[in-house]
Length: 365
Image (cartoon, rainbow, N blue to C red):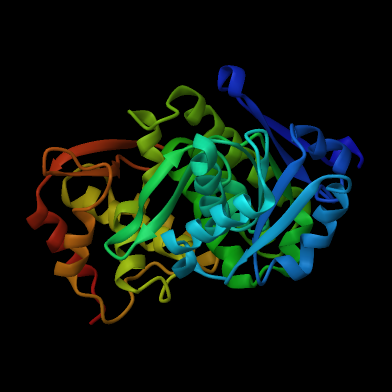
């Protein structure tokens, strides 16, 4: 492909550094990503929606290798231990050795489960992320977080396992439903909201063009978000400090997703509502002004995202789900809050009665 249409970002992790390629026709660009495979075995993990569209392009790049595919049903509910076991059995059936590679072809569910399976097989083998959703391109494919869900909550089991490369072929977005496209933009907004006020202003300026799928602006938005996240990951790979800021909106959002049994809200939609709730929490604690939250809400709405809690949610149940968040310490809630656009921080020891008050106030009348 023409490298002038390619954006390359390095995730700087010493000997484990890796490239994130963003551009057109990358799945078919076998000379670029095939070099990342070190052995002769490969397992492509995908799902029943994505595989019929794009598996053949990847297969052409695997000619001469021993490879097979393992397909999940589509949806967050399938990011389960049962499917991890099936993926590991597929690696066993392939005879995969320690130099094998797992290729994750799909969205965040596929990427998380494939990465976790790769982390488990023989205590860790290579994997390559080939995200096919905007959400996965801008967030979950970068940074090495992998995991599966339990009935008790989302992503409670997982491992940090960095990919060998991320291949973000934006041509795959042509088949993405509009609702999922908007859900991906929520994670773009998140990056701007927590640490890049000029980027937030850029998104406000270009929101309509992004919704119209302007390709040049879309590549720029993806690259700016990935570049921001890559910097954070390189400084704090295992979330001991700064990386926790990337969870802005997620403590509330994951609780909403779990309460809705992963069918009411897409992940990006949960994050969108969660960001608004986090902003309201910040206001309640005197950290921020309503004007910043109102800007956030307006931008999210322009990008086709929800900003209110779905009907039928129970505030007490949501609080109980939030208690399981991985950021919590010493039995106390730790939330990512803000002091306005571009100024997020970690706040520990948050009073649960204050959280409950925000949740109750946010319930639909």
